[in-house]
Length: 201
Image (cartoon, rainbow, N blue to C red; front, side, top):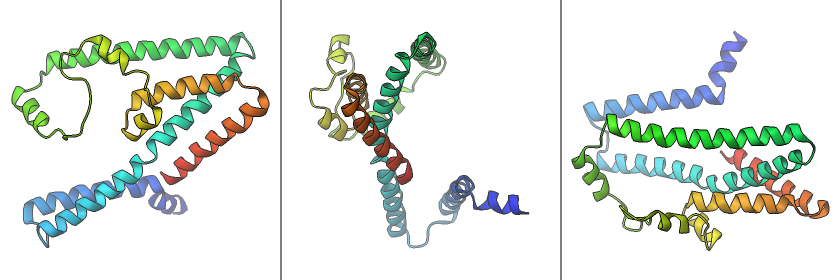
């Protein structure tokens, strides 16, 4: 009885039940209409957007902090012996393999289920006006230029995750090479930032 009560009051269960209730409420509103019409729908959409924005505001500081602390800890471990260095090598190799597999799987799935031209046109039509990025058919050299951001703060503000990740990787490796009196408080600060973002989530 106690385990059943703890299961029903757990955060994961509450989130799952909320998702199910949201799906049922949406299906009922589509079938029988929503009380208040567009006013109620706009209010609910505003609440949903507020929730998403509250989650998104933690992404950049959380990812940056985890990358910096993770790279610094890996660099410290690599200095302790061959076993840690071997583990880091395996980790890097698995990342490369996962990336190649993801690209191959994406092209394979696209070949099996090609994108409908009309659907692609509609998606491009609703693209936000301020969205930036490489245009279709842009050369690979243009992509290479965007890997390292000239302004990491602007990259974080514009949700340019790749540029922010590249900066975090360089920052983490540079921090791992600092003297201990500088490295320890810096890594501790980013550990505290990461834990704080997890609490917010």
